[in-house]
Amino acid sequence: MKRFIFLVVLLICAIQFVSAQTQPYKVVFDLTSRDTVNQQTVIRWVNEVTKANANAQVEVVMFGQGLNLAIKDRSVVADEVTRLAQNKNVAFRVCAVAMKNQNVDKNQLLPGVETVPDGIYEIISKQGEGWGYIKVAH
Amino acid sequence: MKRFIFLVVLLICAIQFVSAQTQPYKVVFDLTSRDTVNQQTVIRWVNEVTKANANAQVEVVMFGQGLNLAIKDRSVVADEVTRLAQNKNVAFRVCAVAMKNQNVDKNQLLPGVETVPDGIYEIISKQGEGWGYIKVAH
Amino acid sequence: MKRFIFLVVLLICAIQFVSAQTQPYKVVFDLTSRDTVNQQTVIRWVNEVTKANANAQVEVVMFGQGLNLAIKDRSVVADEVTRLAQNKNVAFRVCAVAMKNQNVDKNQLLPGVETVPDGIYEIISKQGEGWGYIKVAH
Image (cartoon, rainbow over all chains, first blue to last red):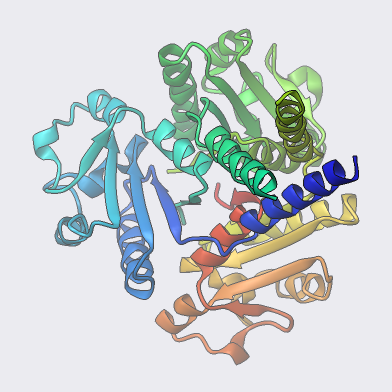
């Protein structure tokens, strides 16, 4: 019985220890705004995070009115999105439901931009995997 | 001792396995905006999520300026809120502190809308239980 | 073997029990807006949360356009920030990257306001430690 209690205590300590590890730099940005200031802001954040943290993983999920960031001729940061999308630690993902609602076709997306079936589920899945979450708004 | 180490390793694996399960579709939407586009947006999201995922659980928490969604004569989506509130997997919850601050009485709320003592605590409790979180803003 | 299975089941139950405990009141507010309504709103929330919950821990992280809340001569709630910053359960933290980008010096900050090297990492670290997250927007 003593050994049993010892085991339980030790394992609870182990769990605490594991969850107290330094938070890895994984963050998902939620963009549902067509505001060009928000477009520029999220790109600045992606740049700053990836430059300062070589192993940071960053994902920008666009749904609602946020699609313009990733659409040719509508994005005010098209060159930056195209460049950053080549970074293997950065992903730009557009919600396919929002694309359908707004009649946006895949060939309108900037190079390297991906689609996901459901932007909301993409975000909450990342949250469930321990990624940080930041809503882009101002 | 060998058996002990084996047990510890096995249990850590079990924990990893449990936490790596597919994320259930549980999401709390945080509405603090009186903007009618935001009202329409969150209702569209609730509709899309519940139609595409039979077991999804969705909650809309309103506080700050977000109460109008749930108030008769102020909501631009009153019929939709009333209809969706009948879905057992959908909840609309208004912060009682915000209601008091803004002199809103329970009888002004649309049918099926609930109140919670503290909208912020309602949201962070859901987050603590593993629900996804999406701020409604554009 | 029976005892082994019993142990595993018991420990999984223990883990469930631990994670099902009442959510402590710990919340980080994310402010990236210079809107004065948002400044007043987040202060009202900090006041309400701390008055109603003696042990609540509250942190306001400012980055992007959110710095004005904490800057002398720009904050519309300067007295409140100064007063609340004296509460050991309340922290106001400004992102040093944003300060540098916007040429804001430490001596422009209201008394008691702290800086953090990276506001985004500050927020996702808190999320990783189980703090609730609320984006301030309307």
